[in-house]
Length: 107
Image (cartoon, rainbow, N blue to C red; front, side, top):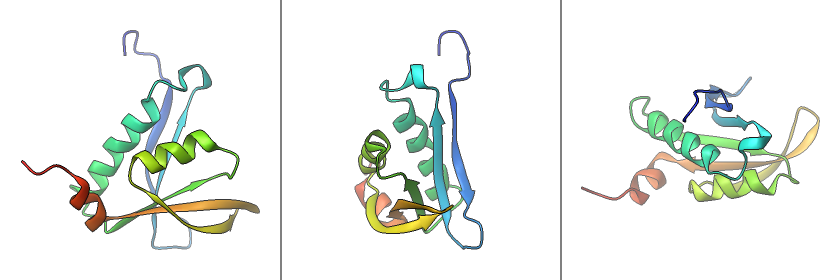
């Protein structure tokens, strides 16, 4: 934030050969542990469930990536299934629009 350096990326994309939309993020290792992934992912979900009016968003994470699993859990996503993605066993987390909207504070 102070020097404008790029520390990662975050966004939403369509999952190939599927009607699902995936939340994805990658943060540069020196920036891990500062809440940047959670902050960026929270903004991406707000955009997805807000202006894009998505009904559901999924996230895929490697079983050993406990930090990323915590990020998805903080966002309200829940472990839905274990799937094979790109030849690897992967956890699929999901969040429905109704659940997302119900968890938001009402003005």
